[in-house]
Length: 422
Image (cartoon, rainbow, N blue to C red; front, side, top):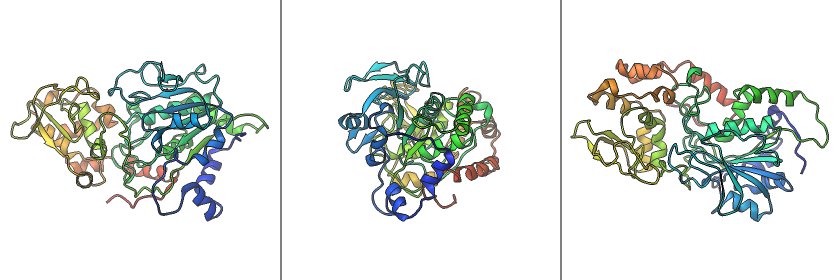
């Protein structure tokens, strides 16, 4: 099937402003019913892959029902030339931060190129025999979760090599609010590449549209996109085009329960809900609960008051060498049912747990580590906590950038939005 070039404006029209209810239902489904991921809506994207040589960026979350996307496509006769894998690897079993080497997938015999380690972006050589790129990875809606950075590099490679890109959209389990400081330019790294808050309230498809439409990609990709938009369409030619295959029956009011854990240290919804607030501890000397069954739900340190909750991190598959391995730590346990944890989060990036840990820590000069500002996206938050600035005043300092981001976000939403944050 020939893939025609269209601009982002046309894409937005196709996805957001439909001619008639029938077309809307075909793309998004009815307003009621079970949430269906983009990957499960094969009738929407299989025609785009037929007869093409395909690159797939995927991991263990890339499921179509009970079967992996790659296996599903192969059974449908789709020719997959190369698989790309993100942090944790294509099969999702590598520890956080572990460098992944290129390999051959044992299940399929297809080459797997790691985009976490020696390089982050597919090369021209990687894509030379590829007609179209496909992306399907579950995000958790948090700026420092690296899959959105991997997606950006994948988009840039598609633009620079002038090849179409299909993103199979998935619900955002933290997509029902927006909060946190907006990343400052100085602190752009792989754990935060764009001027967005910690919780940005967008699906990965919406996010892709935003970074393309706002010109937030690297210079070469932005320039390539402008050249493509300015060029005249030639029959038979292939152009970059961003295809979003939307979810059905999802809105930003949805509380979507992930069927597969997105990474080794986010084993359940409680960890996923607390991750935006408690990932800050990765930039401190406090254990964030890695090496326990409840990462990001429990946190502490051996030198905190021994009257607090106690736990002992041990080596496990997702954290072979956790902070304070085999040492008793004292701190807090925020675990509970998913709803109890949601109530504690209360649609905000919570700072109170970080602030209380700092208040009780005896050696305050060594509480923060070098990476904290990269997670915060600024140097201000650390100084505010040291100065005992109130949480309400810290939140006020996030404005007006937070409100400005919310206006940008609105332009790229594909799904009904939530009510304003309380």
